[in-house]
Length: 407
Ligand SMILES: Cc1ncc(COP(=O)(O)O)c(C=O)c1O
Image (cartoon, rainbow, N blue to C red):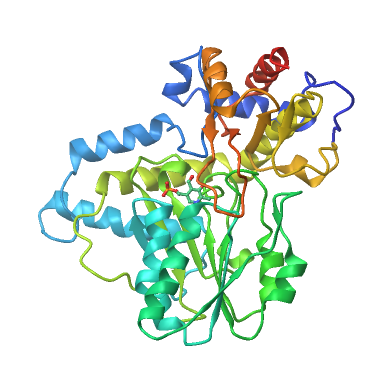
């Protein structure tokens, strides 16, 4: 593979060159991107832009079949019911859940709501007094707060559970899997993990988490930053829950799902009457997953990882910036160069809030603040650049050139 050398940030490595035609055809399918050539969207980790097929799916559903699901028997209602049922199967297939397995899929408004349903509706029936759970305190708050609340809830019922903090290396933005293996014991029954970190873009290596915690513990995966960005296989990862946001995977806002396997614990049955589902969102989600599979998640991953490497390589030569989660090494062959489409950095003198405004004055839309990170994470704000397949090497180069002028 092509290796970066020296200050050569304008060269296009083979990876990007090979995928360039494929990518430009796909970029042209994002109306908000092509309609705003002066702007560069670099905030896909917050929510993703939508390709035309997804917009069409929403329009078609609303103009041909809009009705409630599972309630009536006229054709629009039947079509809507079938659409919702099909979406459940489609999610299983998308996550490489080999049918028929004892698994289920539940729709939510996003990862936050999905992660909340598990401690509310499942964890209390699984844990016993004295059990331990592992939580990732350097990750997104959405994957921390629900587990702390669950501890309090169980406590009130006289069930005391211990919370273990996932060991984490600030130097690489990665979990410390060796320390994790030392930390866990026979009473560790549940692990809240994250697939790709929302600030560092680091792949948390779920295989190593599984090896560290053993074959019996339930692993719940926050896949908000991986579903729609790279192949996610529940079979390969050997996880028990996958929670994701459809809106970060190119579907409409207000979409998401919990996939639950029922092998290591009781069945997951979200309680309560959930009312009318977000049918148009679900229609858009099925189409988004179809589109992503057709486009190829492996190629999307290769493209965004190569673009991210281009950005970190460029930043490596700009002394005024500190890249988060890799104080130790930004060398071209270090693992931090394999970030999954997300890079956070700060200027040593300009505040991140100001940097966000300055970048927007040049047309770049980035996220700038503390990124909802848990207490073990960064204490100071930063600018986060997050990519999807519509982004281009040229956009990265233009960003780097603005950052260079701010040195
Ligand atoms: C890792 C991670 N988990 C959870 C969430 C929350 O997702 P949502 O706002 O869609 O509920 C995010 C959002 O950025 C995230 O990055």
